[in-house]
Image (tube, rainbow, N blue to C red; front, side, top):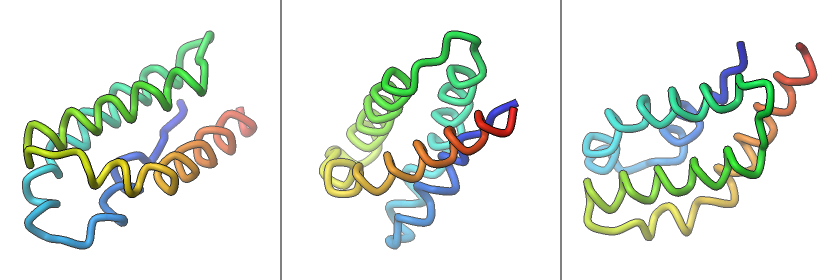
Length: 92
């Protein structure tokens, strides 16, 4: 099994407890979806990252009314997720 550690990666980047309280419960659902994608035989890293950003932006818009935080932090989140997924795939 491959785990992206998405929820942990994003929570570490959110310093505002109020934001974390509003978005935190949605992060686990996003992580489950992207981990499911990563564990398919035909997993495509670019598709996983595209879907991850899409889900994260939607979660922020629905919970906070804006996805600006995602745009400001996406590069770091993307790099961490890419690293985690590549490292885990290489172990299999």
